[in-house]
Length: 108
Image (cartoon, rainbow, N blue to C red; front, side, top):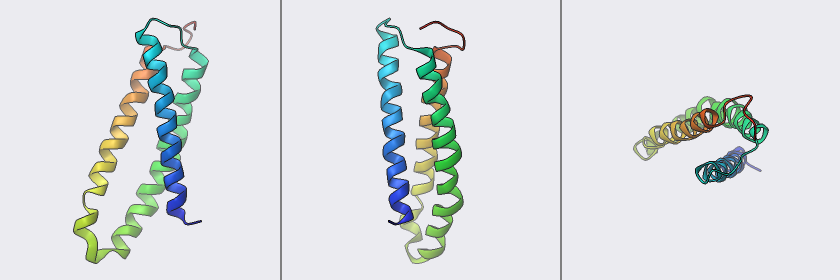
């Protein structure tokens, strides 16, 4: 298995977590209860896995290696990093919004 396969698997896992957050948000919009512990757990997961683990691997290993090994293809790679930043910002916004929607100590 290549390291890029692991990153692809990470993306699938992150998308699944965002899907769960989306379902929770839908419940809140319909005035249905959401278990606060579940929200806090998925938020902790997103911060630890998506932000700390996955994003760090991409920024410290993948992108530098792509730049090093694909110098001839550099123009094709340029859009990747800004797109990555936008995706990270979007995911971060979802996490922050979810965290604000269910304040610590709130009953489900």
